[in-house]
Length: 144
Image (tube, rainbow, N blue to C red; front, top):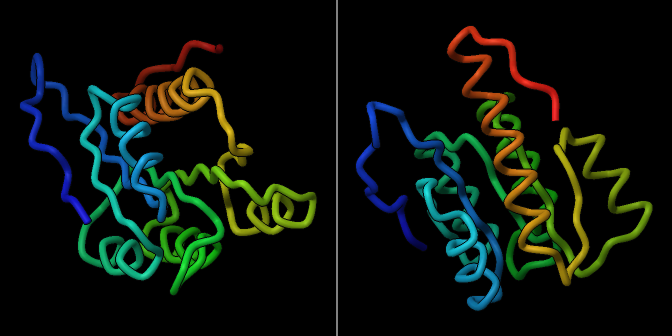
């Protein structure tokens, strides 16, 4: 488990905080590198992620589905219960129509299959959190 990196805000802009949850260390590291410029915290299982979600606020959660102890469905459900405005992106090696439907019913922003495109993950995060910042600032977001 890692807490968000303390990157100083540039130009007075508050950095969005993202929780990355995956039981594979390599994927946590890749996602952390892809998300440079954001405050990133990591959890190596769903149980730790649920605890982190109950202790701190995250703008976005990126989670795997199939993990030991507590699965990604529980992480998604908890994130939305704690703060309904938290966006959740699911990245899974077990993508099925049923899993995707269940994720969307729980309020998931998007579901991606492993292996995933790092460019697609970054674009999804940037679009989502950019929209959130624009709305929070009272601006009209630019359509993609």
